Amino acid sequence: MAVVLMGVTGAGKSTVGQKLAEAMSCTFLDADDFHSQHNKEKMRRGVPLTEEDRLPWLETLQGMLRKNLANGQPVVLGCSALKKGYREVLRSAADGYKPGSFTGEVKFVLLEAKAEVLEARLLKRLAEGKHFMPVTLLQSQLDTLQIDESEGILKVDATLCPDSIVNVIQASHMLEQADVYS
Image (cartoon, rainbow, N blue to C red; front, side):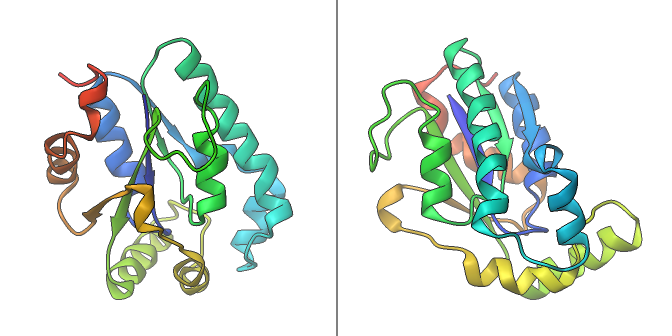
């Protein structure tokens, strides 16, 4: 099973992802680590990525998920996955995936928070020199975010503390299909 923690920049994907992976005794992958230098520089300058920029990155992430799933290893991925089409690329990492099927081995958790909360987090992160994403791209990501209720995405309040978010995910029974958490 793969769990993708999704959401806009500043939602807590990396922090929560590391905690969830620890609880599941599995690998955590941070999608930001797989961006090309070109993509990182573009975002650093405040320029939103294009579909052409994103596709190779998504295909790399898909390959990482596919490798873990094929080896029977659970994995947690922190990835914006803002559009349904991007999530389809990630879902297709599962062997036998059928497009439009939302019950497969790749599950999504949306970390949600108000724009003001996200902006404050981004400003703090930038002041600490911890990330390349500028605050100016937050609105672009919020505008891009597409959620289709039929996808069965678990929505979690990102203002909860990371341990509480992990508890909410575990309590949701999303992970019951695989014996992955201790």
